[in-house]
Amino acid sequence: MEIMQPFKTEVDLQTGVFSPTRDIITRKLSNMATMYADVEAAQALLDSGDDPIIYEVHVTELPEVEGHILHCTTKIYPGKIGDEYFMTKGHYHAQRDQGEVYVGLSGEGYLVMQTESGESSAIAMKPGTAAYVPPYWAHRTINTGSEPFVFFAAWAGEAGHDYGTIERDGFRQLIVEKDGHLQVIDNPKYD
Ligand code: M6P
Ligand code: ZN
Image 1 (tube, rainbow, N blue to C red):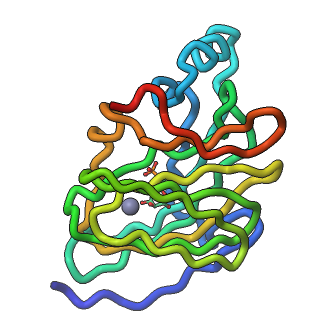
Image 2 (cartoon, protein in one colour; image 1 turned 180 degrees about the vertical axis):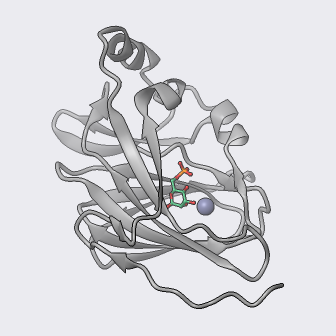
């Protein structure tokens, strides 16, 4: 591996914005409409001409190879599709035996995880929460508050993102608001 020069990024703890500016990945509802449990509600919103930004990822451009530590901030906007709060797509690591660390910076949310062997976990996050995604756990974050939910993430360069498995199967647990209360429920479409 080539020697790289050290560098730093200033992170706005409120917004997750990087300085100097780095690449920003923007995910709109149209990029993930079928991932919400209430597909009809998602489609109705899109049909009305509304395609809200669900989340943004500020990424450091580093080689995606063993040895490097990739890191980014994610800002999930507040909102719901049907009863389900705005969330990330979620993914397994292409290399399943790679973990990840999340640190809550502002707002509040949940980190939902699951394994291919049938385990599930839902961890509440707030500013200062360091949450660990162990190897083999798929992970998705959800904004359960009324302000943007912002967190920092760091993971191994060789891990890679596998979105296809989650696009096909979804998550076993959904984070929804029912009767004005947050609830962690079983996904009726998961089998
Ligand atoms: C976290 C990390 C990133 C990821 C981002 C958005 O910051 O896990 O690797 O890209 O969340 O999540 P997703 O890739 O599932 O859309
Ligand atoms: Zn990951």
